[in-house]
Image 1 (cartoon, rainbow, N blue to C red):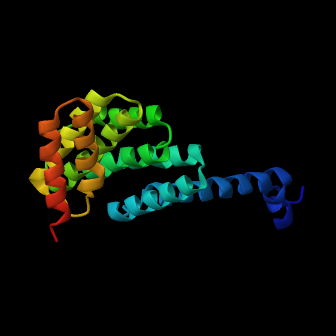
Image 2: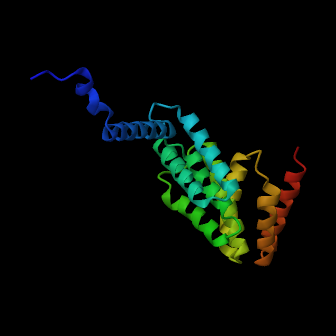
Image 3: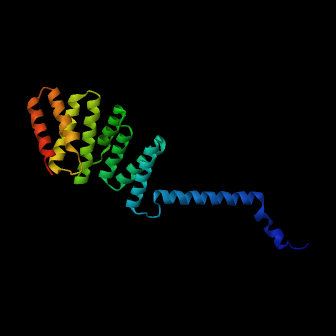
Length: 207
């Protein structure tokens, strides 16, 4: 009996089943590499990962693609909580609020969820700045739903933070002093309203 030829010995390597199997392995390998790059499994710098997520969030928000938007918001929340970056973590909820800003109930739910899920108190000015925006936007959405007293409480919390830190990018006159003063007037507390409006004038005249 003659021994098999080299061609006969390797013929099984080019069978249809083997070809399909190799293609399958190639596809799985490609998918794994893409996922690894996507989630930073090769030790990617956290700043690069965060920038990538922010870019995706901004893109899908502009396209109004809710499922993809929520997917990247979730990834950002997981990453920033793992890194203990509360300012960026809170920002993800502010991104959600902005997406739902025309639906005051949904927007309020997003902001309230941030307060419920926070794992610690803010420590740095950057972290408190995000809380300032959170309280401000809660006050705004509550106002739009005619819930004036809760809105005043949120605006007062925002006022305390602003007067302690004086964040330069925050538009205190439009976002805080005017609505809070108007609410005090609606509640009949003209004394407090006057104080707030005076602060608004001082803020406007401050270079």
